[in-house]
Length: 353
Image 1 (tube, helix red, strand yellow):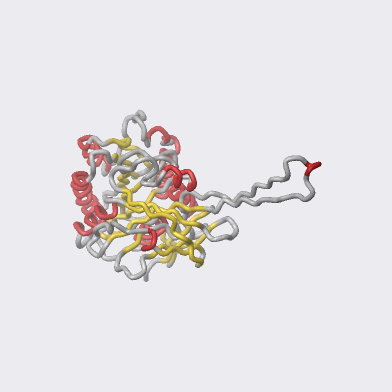
Image 2 (cartoon, helix red, strand yellow):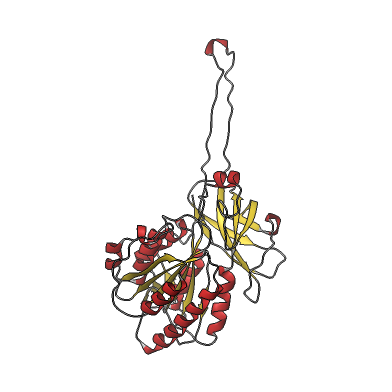
């Protein structure tokens, strides 16, 4: 029987920057000269920034799309797509947005290059170890496809979360950290590097207390919140959640991690290393990918296909600025589609303002 996900948090995701509506009221310059109060309303239309990846059937990125190509719905109501900017390896100012658009949408200027976190969930069980070893070498091969300005950080989870490497573009250091990541055992304290640094906001004490991979995701996500721009987290692992009867219980830590990942603009790409056609805890991996606008991929039969899909997703993304329809603040369902096109759209399914 396929596992079902049980959660007790709102099954919603978050887009990243929302401006709240405001009203400015002005009267006549001098009360004695005014015969009637003139009220002027100025409404700032709420805008939402959404990171969207579009890939074709082969997993290659689809570029050259314009705002008119996208269809956006917020709580089922049409939302105007104000702009759609493609962001590749370099990102001037605020990821392709003009300064005016960035200010209006609340987007911070991000550093050039992509920020990629490699998260390894270690395990010595044979059904998982073989796949983990294989994906270790695939991850090293992936480094050759990155741009010189791209930065990679490495974390791992065994009995608790461990920071293996701060963000760096040094391929030799990344390769060495990947080899260490699948082993049990600690790392010497990692001093924060230059901006952008994961170590600068990494809570080592919380990492030592993180007794589940969900808690490890939470610590990682909170550290990433300090850095602007979109980020990618590649989760090489064997499962999330706890099986309870027919359900997969994701737990409180996952609910917090999910919200932190969304605030940090992190898309999770879950690469399942288990040597099995199906297993219960894959449901949790599918959940985190769906919640954050990433994807889930198996590696037991065609491991190369998973990495090809990953390369396409990491190649770049669109930053959409949406005009949110009027309505109360809170959690909102979000749908992004490409009418008339046969392409896969990866985006967060909900947001909170």
